[in-house]
Length: 399
Picture 1 (cartoon, rainbow, N blue to C red):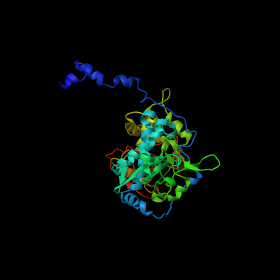
Picture 2: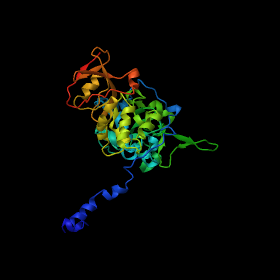
Picture 3: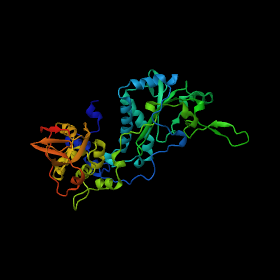
Picture 4: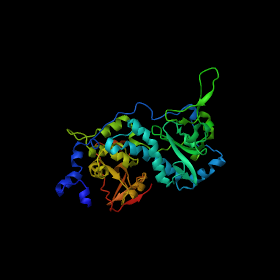
């Protein structure tokens, strides 16, 4: 039998093309229509008093955890890569380009459950972690599992991770190590710790009655959480609490500013992706804006192009939008702004300045430009910004 005989395609080539086209589905799709969301009313997660951790901890490395600690220490820029893997995991689920969501609280129950899997998948890819024999990972030749919780201390441990004779065939062959991961987008905090799972380090509960016997505190999936006393057995990577989870820009904007961005439109018209992106660069100046934010604001397949088109729209207002190419990084350095890399932009309002003005500046076509400040920021008739094309020769001057 030939492949043509096996495939249920019609003989008419045009009809085949129609069958494979997305046009009919796209006409009714809800994934690429503009959505708005209310600000979260509840926190992303909980931090029980018993599980609060500090920054800058100095802990001795337990012998049994040393191979894992050393492995992370030997990974180039491990801490930076780890925090961005957490950021990307949440952003992938938010899928702002198609949903317009910008907060964990906007996720469905199913998506929230999947976040732990997304974290494990992204860390696996980021650090090229091998498969384990009995568990998902192998680090330094030893089995280890990755656990995520939005609640500090809320990690759920399955039976196969530790030895318990009462579990029979479901008991683990050894007391394995877990990598505990946690983040809170509301506070920009995150943490990663290592602990060896044992039966006694997991939660027990008292049985009602005269004897008060202890029994294992399983949930409906036969998993148990770490006991509060087990916190002292966790070795926290990079010194404990981290306070620099990459910022979710839309979440942390002032509510009125965010509303102006997400509802921006031309007079008499509905909100458009281009107008929203233009408003984003008007409202959020002198700080890096990442691709994920632009995608969420634009909610279009070509949202990054909207960032480039914003340059033309905002020049009459005295605002330039810098990217990563050509002369743009040089201009950013000359103005003492953060320098964008690929997938980042930064905007700022410029004013003409004299050659002896002390502020950071650059010159183009014999004219000096510096960042607006003070009353200049509120000038109702701004001087149009220069055309800083990628190939323009820029002369930068520091004060």
